Length: 216
Length: 216
Image (cartoon, rainbow over the protein chains, first blue to last red):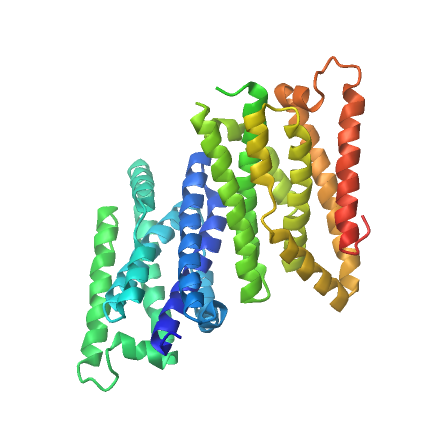
């Protein structure tokens, strides 16, 4: 049986991968070329395999993955509903930036987990080369039409904002997770640790946006 | 290098699997429960793995899968656009019945292919148990609310009609495929063979609808 914190963390990770799979696969329908469609579909498929890994890990430890995911369905659906991409480029940036922020976040957290869970989280988040495709295609599009940059920069900021806001909702509603984030709620450094985490995620996000030539 | 007929047949099969993956994954967002969502997502994932198999087979034989799929993009997109499910049950019936008709069709055709291609087609179409889930859930829903049956029966008929109409478009625009369907265009039995194929597909479709308690 997993601890409440591990169950919550893997639950939100599993559902995050499942819903990312579903949304990215749907966004593939906006691809301008068949080659683009197959590349985005492969990104979606990678999310599904990650979902399966986390789900199998939970099952093997006697935790029902459905039960573990359930508390996070609404908040993650809201996140995606609020950030429905209007076109191919927004979809691509969402897949790339969303994956990046999520990976940074889980990697930070995984340090405080037992070794086998930490190993799972790192395996699941390993970039299997899909982000290169997204970066190359986004750069191309921005070079071709610099006007695109302003719109995508705004889109990237909206994503970071939406992620922080939904993550706060999750943190306040799940005490086990909150403790994990802040090591211990009674720790006087807890607030500083949390804002330190948000700062580090924001810096990493800016670096990704910079690499695309986008203001963050 | 594949023959024109094999290239066309595997092209339409590969794109059919890719677009089915994309649409079924999107339809999973209509699932009433998380368990249903994971089951439909697994069906979508199976379609993606089939797409990968066919795509790898074409590449290994020096045929560009993108080039092979290209001629079938419009007709298959039209098929799915004309048959966008309005709810979870329509999505589920579409996945089940669509897969069934496609499998029957490719199995009929595979008899006329070289052995290795025929083997690939049969591997790709092997039902890995997902249809049991669809049948069980559809039966449950029909029992719970018999009014659903009329709507789903109509939906099933629309699907069969749309498939025949899109398949005719494909057949008339791709001479290599047409020859495969009819063995040889000059064969006096060609027309009879084609209508025989359509009849057999219709009978198998009726059997699937019957098993669900739906009029076909």
